[in-house]
Length: 240
Image 1 (cartoon, one colour):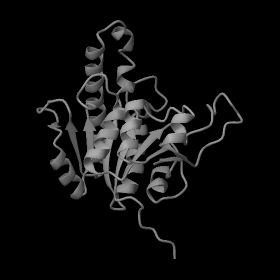
Image 2: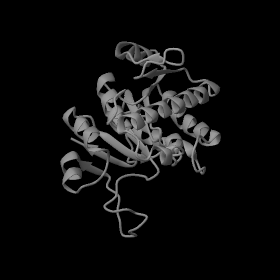
Image 3: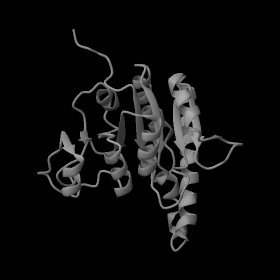
Image 4: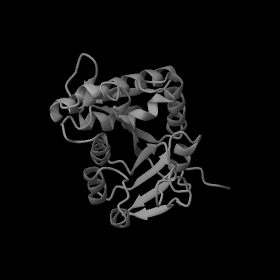
């Protein structure tokens, strides 16, 4: 009999803001976010504790031209607010799907979402609620990749799952090079030496130093998230 016990008890899922756009040029596609929520629900139903970090590119893309020449810190704060909007949209989609969910923000917006408190976040996870971490790290000059690595380490996640449009890490861009092959597994050191852009350098270094593995997979591949959590060969595992 096959063991259907999840390999991981607690995970940190990193979603790009662009993943919420579906086929739209920007913004949030309701059908797409609903489909992503169903993928998450399939894992939550296994008893896996899930923290989520969402980027803001789908919203910030629409205002990016106006941000040209803007002070970098100011633009980064705008991006953080975009992640709050995405987090609220995701929380509502989870409500519709019957999934208990809380949003915690690194920026203080208490009329809208509660502030990030590590102990409370862990308690929510232990109670079976999904926790969405909004507003990045709360500091400019840091990406949501770094926020995912940081929150993953703080909550004691066993792995960071980076959901992308591509089903793993390839030797070259598969859209440009037909001979590109996907890595099943690759070490942090090898990924660095080969110059593979898994995450930004700060996030990648934090995961490596904390011995927090990363699995890169496609969120648009049905059942992929569940297969990763079950320990199946899905996407690319970056290990210490």
